[in-house]
Length: 372
Image 1 (cartoon, rainbow, N blue to C red):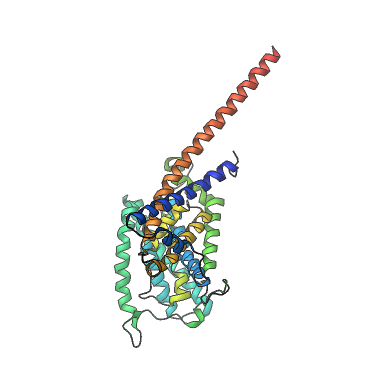
Image 2: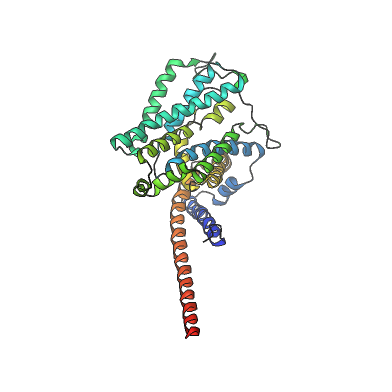
């Protein structure tokens, strides 16, 4: 059956739309139970963002996208890399320390620092991969533990290399030289801020992810191993090697998560580094069904809710944490919706096959009757 048939397209769109409707209804119910102004909350969240807010949404979505792709690489092989948050932290710290030394000029400093981030984060993810392949340790447990260890290790190393800013108590790594700072792109008319230059990196990562997993033998082996390890072994795939490669690749992508902010906004590693990006990436990857375009849409939605919620406390008197309820309900609803849609699709496919078989039997009977 044609994969781009109207039925399949309709079913694919039905799941996220159903999840959004369910999230809207449940959140409205929660707001009503606590006596909050439901209409005012939705007007505040759903109003058209101003140019400055639009840039903030794009920038946040860029970071979310990189985090979600890192998670999705593991998901496609049925590996649950819960350690993106720690891997991202290791990568951005390594890149900040390297770039701050200014050993290379301009853009060369940026490129090599990005490679350093990918290598550092990939090696950190490799610890979990080694434990799974050689000792049979679940990657869920090991990556969660490695998140905490990464925070401690980076904090310890940060204390060794950090310097105090003049006139303040803020400590940070050496600031990246101006020649390696990316001022951003003026893509949104009327905005005083700029889109991260490394939004281009997110686009490139999406293309690489799509091509490698969908158009190469490696991608086929990875997806085959995720669907059935025994079938992959029977077809000649070296499963332990594939596990190591996929987990390290997932970690390498995680190392890119902090690059847009490092070179486009912060210019050093310090107190402005975000936490929780890895866990947001898990939700976004699930919402986007590990598809590069789906992840992009989910990232924009996640960022939209985050940025639009900033006005809730001041404008409506409602805590902006209500957005966490919306995001959580969307995730639960989309998982249920996709399962319902999958079952519906399966039932419709079975009915189609039954009709075709019945028609074929009827045609055969008619042919035999004419021959007789």
